[in-house]
Length: 176
Image 1 (cartoon, helix red, strand yellow):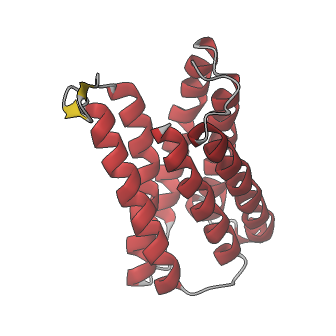
Image 2: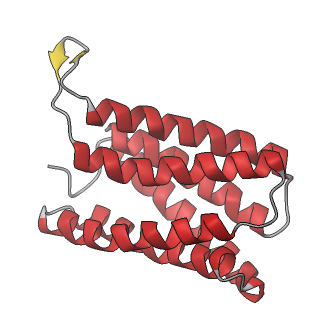
């Protein structure tokens, strides 16, 4: 359920970032939400990584694999937020980070698929494609693709938010 909570906010920040890519909104305003979501995901990842802590009256086991995947996205939003505050125009380094996220997201989706969560596997593969488009836009600096990437980001945000809501509410059909 904690994954669902995080994904609700990931979905919302992707929608905000997609609209921002369309030229709606300003850097400082968008940075606040990116920093919030990045920090939230960081806290969730630390929770998962060091889960052998006493939590709500019971012990939780840590899961470094899940934490590592979550940190990929935490650092994405922290990086975007900090760059937006600083009004950084050259995003090539971040773009190359995005292709590394893609390289990790593809096999992660496969492992999640093998574990039986077909919906989450599909999300991982969708995020892999999305982060690859960020690499095209920012790493390769192919600005002519800004509008379709912005719309794709917005749609992926909606899908991610709905999936997160279903997980958080206990309606995820592939839940263990």
